[in-house]
Image (cartoon, rainbow, N blue to C red; front, side, top):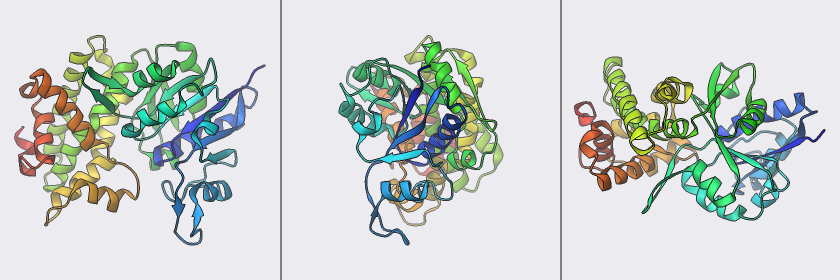
Length: 348
């Protein structure tokens, strides 16, 4: 019986939490999957004691942890960090993409013609690429550039909670049920419930847009407002997420927004996500600070997706004349670009 080989593209907190689950499963279901899971790591020096001067891949392979992006969690002895992306995915049957969305186009271009025939992919990345001819979701980009099927895994997936093995949920949005079933097997854990959803576009749009709403929620927290105000932001955010998704992709299902990828992810992100955290601190800052500065100080190398996504979505709204139909999205965008003070977030 053929066994499937799995590769992870990315090594941030969420990628590490995901590869940890995959590694647990490939050990348990060894008759179906190759035990070793290769993880592509963007190579960098790790200067923190006691590893000062070593490459990050060396540290990960020696300690089976990623002390820079996911400290305190064992990834598993069968996770192997690889600095060369082509080597990482060589011979992989199942490829998991989990890197900041602004880097995915360049990553995929490096893999053109390097993917094993018959391989399948899944994207855990939340974001979209805006082009003159229209928006492109990450899964669509993977399909077009690499010529392989690409599911998406979306949900309330704060990495540290999953690392602690606290109850979490996600959906796999799919077009190809066989591929989705395989990916469900490598992610499903007693603490991580995975449902299959035949609406990959809806699931991915939810994962993309919730980061804009989280910026608004963070501003509410930074202003010292209470749960009623945050609930209003979350409710309006969900309304605009649904409306925008269906305006771009009419086939998106209404019930998708009630799944973990929709309201579940939205609530978790608005209370515990990095976009909320940075927007909160940005709002509270007594002297002007940029989101880039706070990203560096607070996220320690992780990337903030909400600001970039807000600007990308706003570009679409402007081009199509939809700004007045999405008052929260538009208000948040004007605040982060300095056209309005944060107090206006509750006057959308």
